[in-house]
Amino acid sequence: MIETDEAICAARVRELNDAFRKAPHSRGKVCLTRSIAALPLSAQLAILHRVMNFDAFTEDNDPYQEHNFGAIEFDGEKIFWKIDYYDLACEYGSDDPSDPAQTTRVMTIMRANEY
Image 1 (cartoon, rainbow, N blue to C red):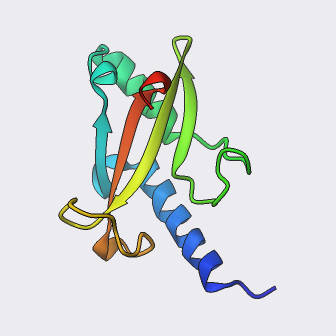
Image 2: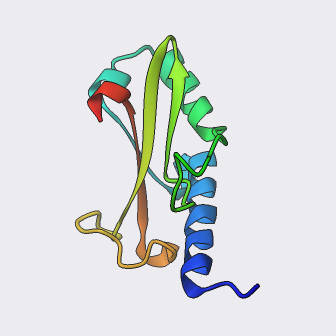
């Protein structure tokens, strides 16, 4: 089976997103919504730990196979995380999310009702 350029690009984006999610401090920016940031630090760290270890990707929650969105449960509440792709200045969308030299990844962690 020959992979298309689109499939190769999606695989590269997925690889970069997984690396970022697992080590966000070194590969992009993490944003917490106000309600997440208002939680005690221990809760914020527990949520981040669950996001970093998330691997429950399915065709339903990851139709483009980019691993750029997920949902976890924390303290009886649904928490979403989402990765977006920006240019290096974070002013516009990235022209090529598969190229880390021209992409800044930004992961937002929020309560589901904030989405």
